Length: 390
Ligand SMILES: Cc1cc2nc3c(=O)[nH]c(=O)nc-3n(C[C@H](O)[C@H](O)[C@H](O)COP(=O)(O)O)c2cc1C
Image (cartoon, rainbow, N blue to C red):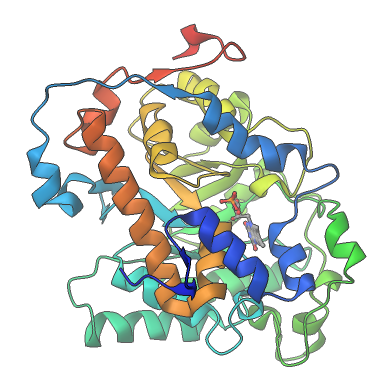
């Protein structure tokens, strides 16, 4: 991994180092856009705090020497009914407008890092590079540089009032080789992000939400806020989506156990326990706190993968999420920080840091494989959470 010496006394060692460096590099408007949460940012802060409240109780005197020699093997994770293997249990979350962080390459830099690190990138509807160009670059990079990579692309979908347009996005994603459709279900209205209002957020000239450019109406891409998301979206619409695509469907933004059960009944392949990185409903539960009840409601059902995102900043956070029953975590802002600091290499560094930290945490907890994390009784929650939930 390449270390970046920004100042002679400072080497970027962890996600927070990258955050601080990205803050120095980004414009105030871009930083406010990426970093902010909604209202009083209670949920934004609590997503990270909740991980800190969970303590680890390590097991000792277990031979973990394999981890040292074959760390990528020990972190391999099977998802989507064992049809997909990722080299470690974290995935790049869909985040909008990567060209604000890296004007030259934007999402192309992110996708190259996903290929190099053999993981999944979930591409946002609001990408600043067209989904087809991202898919082409994904294929090219695998073919020319990393033929062993098991990287895949998923497509994150917002459902718009204009259903024809929505259908076109789904069909395009399928045609371009995206392997799953991640339907964001926590955004019937946009959250109230005051820092972005203060800094007058707008896309600079030349940067557009490329997937929203319609052949008949160029304005869609520029004035993305004027393409209304469908606040009437409900469970019955999932049947419509099902009828027009054969891609696995993953619902992003589930926080309530009842909704997880309903998703299971609708034959959904995965859910992401997410509060949109604290950008939607403020004072909602942190995601890692929400996860336990959802796992309890669903049981260890093999039909549906349960993922979690929000506030993952250390390898120990990933270990905690897996111990609580998540298949994998998704990483949002840290990817943006890596991208802003050093493009593709920055994102690769972020993924490598998390991988190294997870591997070390596993060793120190006596875990040789991801499966061992589940078997071991590693977690102690603080008083806020009823320990019996574990
Ligand atoms: C700047 C930014 C843009 C985002 N854009 C999207 C998006 O386009 N679609 C989506 O489903 N989620 C979006 N999210 C939410 C992320 O997918 C993810 O849920 C969240 O970032 C996870 O929290 P973390 O940033 O603490 O890792 C965005 C989040 C951020 C911070």
